Image 1 (cartoon, helix red, strand yellow):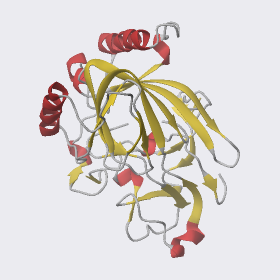
Image 2 (tube, one colour; image 1 turned 45 degrees about the vertical axis):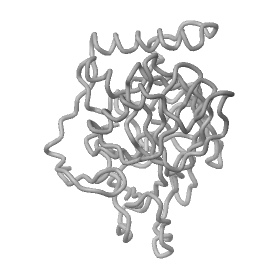
Image 3 (cartoon, one colour; image 1 turned 180 degrees about the horizontal axis):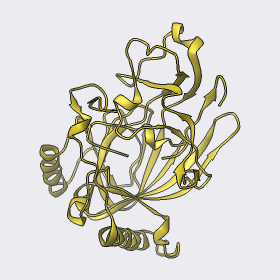
Image 4 (cartoon, one colour; image 1 turned 60 degrees about the horizontal axis):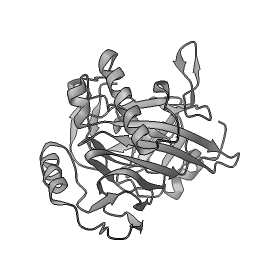
Length: 304
């Protein structure tokens, strides 16, 4: 959603889609973009505001307009959104002139709600005439609805002119690519065509209310509260997780139990998903600057 750390090198659809980091493909024509609207969107924001108040009772009421609803382009009803979705309060997105910076967010999942599996990987902006290097692919062939690298205000909202989102690097005039495996570095032969680099986001989560299970093979548990074993998921939550694994596209195997106070580090490129427990979950995100329009979701239907 927000502009990532960037190293500037120069100045500032009907095709097949592949699953997030490798895998099969599906036709863009077969996709139906759905959004949560009207009363259902109002219900979701109010539910997140109540969850926020339980997690941080002394923080004051969270204004509904500050809550971003992430429906992945798959939910039109509250019933669907209860299963897969996310609520976000953006605290800050700051970027220094050299491209470094930080992001702070409050992430919220309703009881039993799933944050879909995704990863944050390096993004390369090449000249519009550049050929796509071997092992790389244009982001528009990987990510539904991708139109370029957006401009953002410091509060994380996109810059608009006459109602239209503005882009630092629009797709088309620029060739915007990621490694197909999410990890391969840009080959030396492509360096002469390079305009900018947006490093994948690394992030740290701290659970502050409720509980849940984080699915992330390469995550690092930084801290677990006394009496909490992050490697043992409670039986009731594990049963729900097994049902979710059968219903959703999830490839990560490692399961980390996140009770209140648990802190986990996710290096860039880490595929991760999160399933909230029966009380829901609220967790803080501290990260390098975000660029959510380039997130790689494993489910190819997702539109971020």
